[in-house]
Length: 78
Image (cartoon, rainbow, N blue to C red; front, side, top):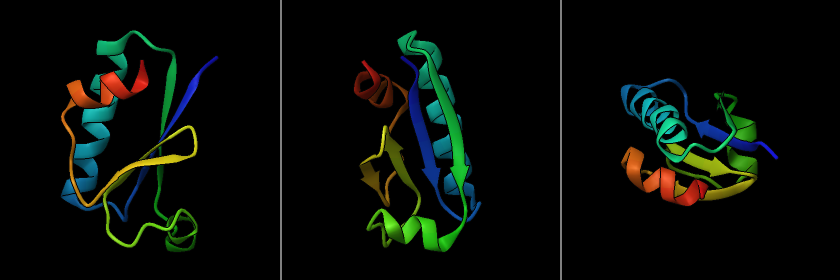
């Protein structure tokens, strides 16, 4: 079953870095996953996120306001 990774943010440099790390993490983990961006502020606040960027895996917010390393994200995917 494929994991669903969402990057919550409005497209700032930090959001782009988090997206890059998430895509790298998919490769590192060997897990089947899709990475998508959520830029709609209403959707972002539905997750209870008040600071971006944020990383959501399978509907659960893993981190907000920080950029975890690709290695850290890969561990969460496993």
